Length: 291
Image (cartoon, rainbow, N blue to C red):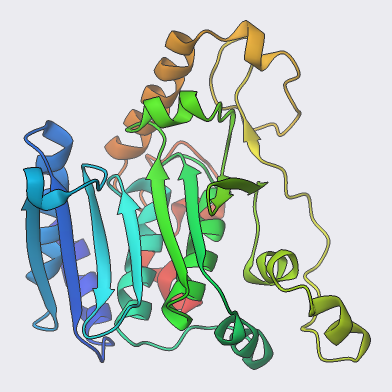
């Protein structure tokens, strides 16, 4: 699954892990489960701080298959991926391993304290596409929050593999974020934006000068599916007629094409579907920028 060069780079990054990590995979007999098994076994072989376990059938319980947990040993800290996080999401996987493994999260101190102070249960589900450029920021932001506060749980779901859920919830754009079973938001969103929606005291702290600096203004729109061709275009113009003009079969085909393009592209290579600098950058370089 990982070539020799990528393994060498990942091994050097995993040396930053200071706490033991448990990877628990929930698998069936399908082709995607076999691909995920190979990826996770490759990762576990690169560090003696990482253990690997498989659960199948009744042992997997009601977990999505294929999926896997990254857990901090002797702790409730955990992030979950339902799918194979390659393409744009490979950097999210690397950062999750480092942060769950005890490497410091790169956030402002005030923001870190806000995350740690969150009280209650926050169960996030993020639906993404492997070729989506806006999805990794959302996934990485909530993963970082989960690494700081065990009250925050996240499952990152590849919509191409879980089409029944996509159709049941009528998800038309990625990233789409659910919190405790209800729609929380769509589009690119960082930790500060998520906290602003979660923490009702944020506005008071802002008035008192204790709120973190605001991010520069930019368009944070969800990536929508083109109503005429049912594919994910680069434009973020909304598609008002998508729900009626795209049949379930067409939407399935669009998700499949998106997943296929991403899975064929080695993380960080020029074969990605995007020509942006962030796509061409090595996933290890992108991970180092967020560490």
